Length: 113
Image (cartoon, rainbow, N blue to C red; front, side):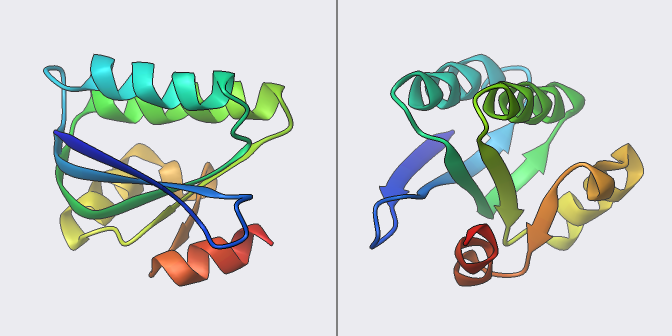
């Protein structure tokens, strides 16, 4: 699992790209890195799933945990660029009502403003 962290031009939003599989083998390191970003003061986070090929229930739990932590500090998380497979997992899990999901990273960043 590769994690690519980038800041938008205005510096107020951090984009986190996940590449590979978010499952039991990778979820702990992803969770640790996302929570560390929050501890460092990040409050607005775009999760870019363009290169995420698989997400398990353990991976979904990471997203819920991060969203709850961000909510505690008046932050927000949104998702973008979901493949059809990831969209299906989100739909089955009922995540459509929990997270704002955008087609592109640009739309997600605009949705944060």
